[in-house]
Length: 365
Image 1: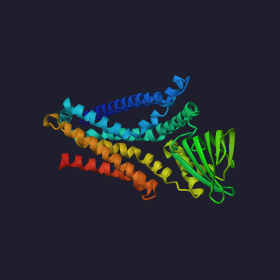
Image 2: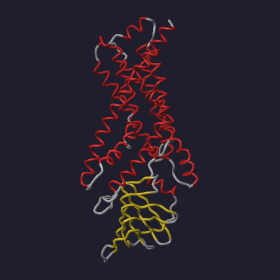
Image 3: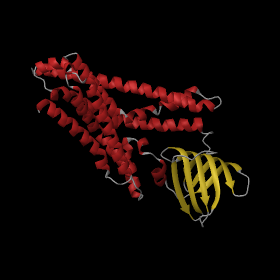
Image 4: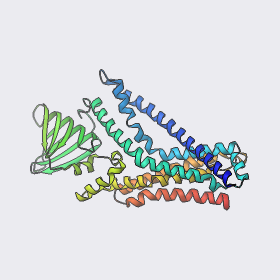
């Protein structure tokens, strides 16, 4: 009997792994196709655009996009594998040799946990590096267009004040953790907070004590705009302070997050974004295992009992609610309204307990 159970466990585990891999690769291909089409649409106005550069720009950011939906890949893969096993009556045969539902899902739990460890320690750093490379390609591709002229402003904002007055910096995109900016607009005020000039530039790079703006256009009150290849703006900002405004925690590899947290705290800055990202990555193996519990709770019902559509809808709804809960707690943590540990682990505990209790009721209740 233990030999039979061991063979069936390996079989169920391989079926689960194959289903998760199929879902992941399918979503990866779909996201890559849609992103490439969108990138080609954005680049259609660029003369002599390089198709290869557009493809690399699009492809290199797909891994990070798909990383966010990895829990759904595990959820859908687990549901698909268990429903398929039930449809082919393999679960009935397994029960006939004395296997319980807990033995069905144990291989999937182990594999999901290992997938989570791999995704955190290997896939996440690789995806973060590729995303940074994608930003470089995007800056090269759209750099001449992202001048801020006539634009509605960018996503990233920062301000600095020194003996010369106040400067507010806006950028449409950032790379190298905020040290390099693209599509930059700088609003400069004097010591009395009176507006003096606006500088728009294709790109900006932070160097010791100065922002170096490339291909800049200077607008002053009562005068015509002046173009200059380089404009230097004095600054007292450090790379650590810039990261807090321009860098996104998602682009920092897992292994570098503790260093970023330590540097931000030593500089007296808020490191909530980095902390919750670090805790999210630590909790990822357990979150994927929780998705297996949720999937098993809604998909181990035999086909002859009917109600398959409701089970699938219930599983997808449960996964969506967990995603919403994780997003809400993450936003609360970044706003310093919730501790990062609580924000990262609350969805994991909620999902695991919900699936476990539902499965316990079905099997032993």
